[in-house]
Every structure is written in C-alpha cells, then in structure tokens.
Image 1 (tube, each protein chain N blue to C red):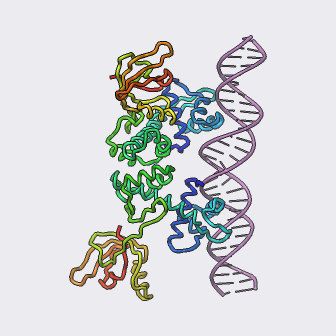
Image 2: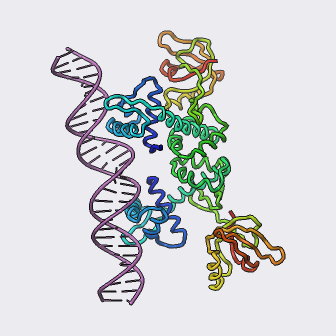
Length: 219
Length: 219
DNA sequence: ATTAATTTTTAGCTATATCTAAATAGTTAC
DNA sequence: GTAACTATTTAGATATAGCTAAAAATTAAT
C-alpha cells in the first residue's frame, strides 16, 4: 500500500494532531494545520479512509488506524533523519532544514533510509530534539530534567509538571508556560536559585520552587 | 521560472536526445525514451514551448533553447551529485543508484545542492563516469572512445557505459569491468569483432556488442 | 503525382488535488 | 425545542498528467 505525497502530508498532519491530545481530529483542524480549505480535507479523508489508514465516518472527526500510525511514523522517521543529515553533515542551521526535509521525506527507497540511518550513526533525536522513530516505529523516550536543573543558554520544551494542582496550572497558563512551550534559560541567580527564561519572545522570572516543579526536555 | 517534476523529466529527456547527435528531436523519440505515448508528448511539448525552454512548431521536431539547456543541466547536476553521494557515502553499488537519484534530482533547494557539492568535494564525474555540470552548467570534457574502437596494445580506463540498464551494469560488475578499471586491449578477433582485454591481471573475452557499449579514456 | 505509410496532433476521457459556493448536518443559545 | 450559528459535505470548476481513438499533416513509394 502506497500513498501519494499529498496523502502522506495529510496523514502526517492527522498523526501530529492526534498526538497533541485529542482522540479524534476535526476537518477544520486539519484544514488549518495544512493551510487548505475544509472542502479539500473532506475529499482527502474519504481517500485516506478508503485506504484504511484512518477511520472515517461522515460528519465525525477522523481517527488514525494502527496501519496509518505506522505509515506516518515512517514518513516522520525519514523527515527527521534528513534533518540530522542537513545539520550534522551539510552544516545547515536548525531553522533552515524544515522545508528541505519536507521534500526529502517523500523519497521512496527503504535502502536509502536504512543506509542514511547507518551513516548518521542511528541518531535517536533530530536537531529540534524530537525523537526519531526506528524502522519498527518505536521511539526512545526523551530524558526529562526539571527546569531548575537546566544550564544557562540551554533550550528545551515544557513536557510535564510535578505539581498538578489547579492553582499551579492556572499560574503556568497565566504566564504562558503551558505544556509544549519552547523555552530557553537566560539567566540563573546564584543567591536564591531563581531563574529568567524566554517563552514566546517574552522573558519571565521564576522562583526556584516553581522551576523545580516544571519538567523539560532539552533540545 | 519553475517546472513541475514531470516537465523536468521531459526536458531532461529532450536534452539527452539532443546531445546524442540530432539537432531536432521527434515526438516519437521522446515518447519511447520516456516510455509514454506520443499524444502525451504532444501535450507536454506545448507546455514546455509556452515556458520557452524549447522551441516548438507543430509537426516539426523540438529544439531545446539556451534557457532550457541551462535548466536541464542543473537537474542533471543534482542527479549526478546525488549518485556520488549514494556511492561514496552511503555505499550503494553503482547499479543501485539511478532510481533513487531520479527522485532526489527534483528536490528544490539551491543551498542543498551547493552544500552537497561542497560536502562531496566538488566531484567532476559521477560513478558512471559522466561529467557533473558546475553551477553555471559547465562540464569538464574527457575525450572518450568505445572499447571496440581501441587498438591492440592500447591501454585506458573505463569511464562510462552507453547502456546503463541494471542487467548490463550487473554483468560488468560481475566480470570486474567497473567504472575506473584500468584495462588493456590484448587482441581483436577480425572475424566477429570480439576482443580480449586485461582487467585487474585477469584476461576477459567480450563480444563486439558489449565492447561498443563501454566507453574508454585512453592513457 | 497520387497513393500509402508514418508521424503528429486533436478530441475526449480518467484520475489526482485543489478551489468556491451552496447545501446539509450537528451544536449552541435562548 | 426551535432558531441561529458552526462545521462538514457535496457540487461544480480549474489545472496537471496521463490514456485511447480518430483526424490531420508529413514523408515515402510506386
């Protein structure tokens, strides 16, 4: 079973939206993430349904199937391997690789993917810190540290909190430090262990107490 | 001005057919080299004419324009650079690279092409011995003759093949007549034009048919 | 110089992937 | 529980790229 490049792109988008929490993904969600129109999405999900990579029932959201998930993971694998190649070997900056990897991810050659993986020394994470699925679709969990353990100038992504009280979550939401936010540690005050971080182009001060309750995956 | 992948493939075919002698290329020639139907070619050359990469007059052959030639050379440049990458870095055999390079040659990123060229140390010839155009479309020429045109006792190096089918490449690899191999013509049988050559301290017999498909640079 | 053969083009159809506009299904508000 | 709003699908276009079958132009043969 093979998908066209366009079908692969839709499937990848559906996979990413599914990952980001929701069990079922809406036509509008897909349309906005793909920068296309809902009508085009309707058409495409009918095709993806016929190929059994998603479950599709009219007027209800779509759910990715086991087979669809595996397919998506192989495309993501290729995307991230190429990103590693571009940065490690061809000296691209990590913010220059996405568009090129979007093209390279569709090259069909199992041998190429395998040899590239080998050549890059079986990397487990891409230049953005995202995990690279192996040939079976398995991913290595990323090591998590608390925000207070980070070094100055290190960048990362908020992935969880230790204290999940409503008050704490409300506070995080208010300052923009939501789960998934990409942050960078700007400064550490030796005196009290408080820190200064960059979130969404805004700087933010945080006590050591708060910082030690926030879990980070460094990039 | 950009062409679709399909337009790039047609243009490349027209370029290669033009190189192979004839000043003007027929619809049927293109159809058979592209393994498609003359009707499809008619359609496509109208499009390529509109984009001014070929000159097109109904019922006459097409001629590639200056602009078309430059465009074709850049696609060929990418194709051959990727072939070098696959063989030199990813340890592909030289008969396994064509299909993958056909896909990679369409990746659009001037930076990628430039960095790849750099990474490979600005190679001048691909694994089949064909010259790699530089960013201005210039190629380094090497005078080549076919193995069947060599004189007895003349020595040389295999630099390319005319027939690059997988079967032919496999055969050459098997007998040790790889690109780059240094050979010497030991004898020529007048009766059927078959020859005896020395390759890697081994003597090898070859039909005239095979010999005329192997290109040599004499030393 | 006609006729015959070949080549090339046109016409019309299929499939993918997109769009806009209109219709329909589902959800929310009062 | 109906009306209003939102989400989704359908219908009908456009553009690319291919096909077959038939028409038209060119070339070859007698």
